[in-house]
Image (cartoon, rainbow, N blue to C red; front, side):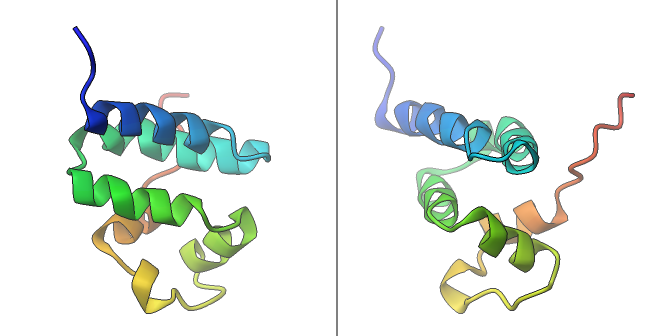
Length: 91
């Protein structure tokens, strides 16, 4: 059975989230992707893909309020990312 377009996009986005270039970004975005991508609508997947086009320092500054989030990126998906508990609470 073949996967649909949304499942293919989820798989690509999960890979991109876990392979950003820095371990910190990998952990932050990878954990977020693992927690949320399965429930995202196709439109939310597109909004998350747009966020992944931004640089790690840019995303970090937005998440930590060091820089304002440009209106096109201040979406439901960004707010989920900003409020996501990145720490592993199982240890």
